[in-house]
Image (cartoon, rainbow, N blue to C red; front, side):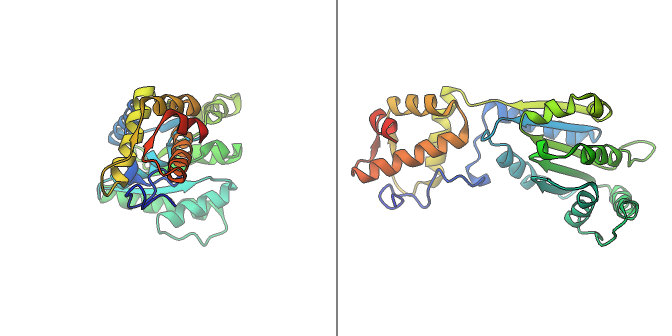
Length: 261
């Protein structure tokens, strides 16, 4: 492919959520600040939403990678689970027994673990990605888990990350009790034109072994217009543009090449 042609150590615009390539836009910075603050407070639910491709999963992974040793975390991705399957998955993620078939036994095991961690002075969080896929009965199970507490604080902090439909679901009458427990809510916005340019430059800088490839102002404009500021679409457009330029033996990505891609 074009990797050697442009002196990249790897393709800079792969669609996998690699934290090494994380770009902190203003919107992502605000979301990270919300997560950090919520973690320091340790109570209630946190809701983070964003359109498809805005970098929610990347943000989750960066957040989890930067947790200190005093925080235990379980990460569940795309949770199309029953309430009992959810409990089993949570326990397995925390490395505790998930063999029981009775939900009460699973919750008791989880509660014992949470109390033990609180005695050790540790915080425990549950982060669920693609949470818009959670069935309503599983949402209710999460609300019940948030009842695990001491006389002074919650034992488990729950972070829900998903597409905008998550917010719509939480706003329904049936889930009003859960919605009332959300203490912080944040929405990831698409990148601005300036951020699109910085995002592209950042990913190229991370991947480059030698002199980085140059994108013209026209290329930035076309990619920004095509993508609408959505990182996943930026990656797709840039990857195609690099492939097109490679096919033409050109090392500068012009507006014409970006349009052809």
